[in-house]
Image (cartoon, rainbow, N blue to C red):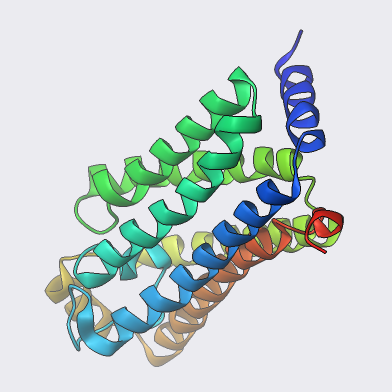
Length: 234
């Protein structure tokens, strides 16, 4: 039995056993996760992040929550949402679903809290690897939640656009020897000042595109969490 068959069987068993109570818990998790995205962003740009009032815009989610109040806010809200999901996955899921859920939470935790972005080159590499794995886990959750086509497409299109913008940013970083998202802000600022106006404007648009597509990717996923549960949420 291959891994696709295993997950197909596990996800079918899980979805067909969901009750109105389970759907309400998933809806609650969805609300928490969506609120988390907005609250963390506001906290960072209100000056409660590690950068204080010297905030960076545009910036990725990982960068805005890497320390300061958004770091703790994200941990509390994100974990609260996962508690709701665990209540469903651990009660209605089989062994495969339970192991998967535990791994996804730990991978997400490691991505943001054990290996935050912008600390060092080594941690950035590990952060990127875990972030990639976390992306794959969202695809698996599509199967468990039976996310409808339009939300899946929104997720995939946003992800592909995100990768495109990231590649363009990395090319500029490599050419001009600096990191757009780094705690070594003095070096980054010094190097950025050396950029021509055209390159600087292009970099801003790449970063803005990265920020927009990253957020739209997760919003697509979150809005789709209950897309096949409407019959249980009436």
